[in-house]
Image (cartoon, rainbow, N blue to C red; front, top):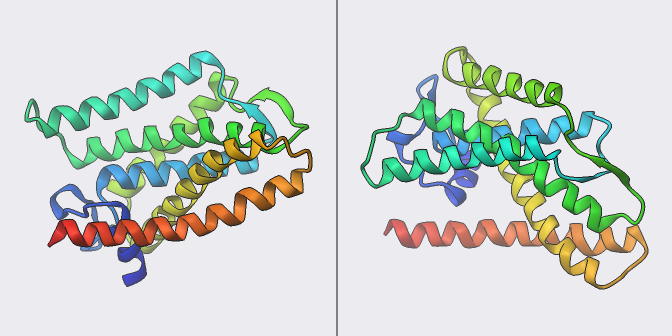
Length: 220
């Protein structure tokens, strides 16, 4: 659908050789971005359906370091291939993207909760290897599904990726704005929410408009 391609166009170069095709159709964003946004959606669903929705602390240190390692892994893959040290593949781009995608919300969401609520659960959003292994199982399942078991799954994968784009960018904007709101020393959670979420939605729309125009300029 054109709307999926337009949203992907705002955040990604959409180069065919760096993208995954399902049923002969190119996904809205490249392989690495597909992994990042699809993985982010997995992580957000994990938070939503777990009992950590009010947790205000990032994962315990050894899991946080694991996530940082995932980010470094993707960075090394991207930089080394861009400068010509080695060749990478779409399967590697997808896998490293998924690993980073599950990591990002688990750092941003607790910060947002800590800035938003006066009372919250003083616990880590991820605190056991079992939870990490569950997320990694979902990553591997998604990886296999997207690459090898994708019959009749173009639209589910494409829609999930685009939802992940909106969700991750919205979460990032909410987290950034929450720092400013926190400094206002407002006690009411409702007032804080009204200062964070509507403005983040407006900025999200503006961001996609600006990114689309920048992409147009670069493409000329």
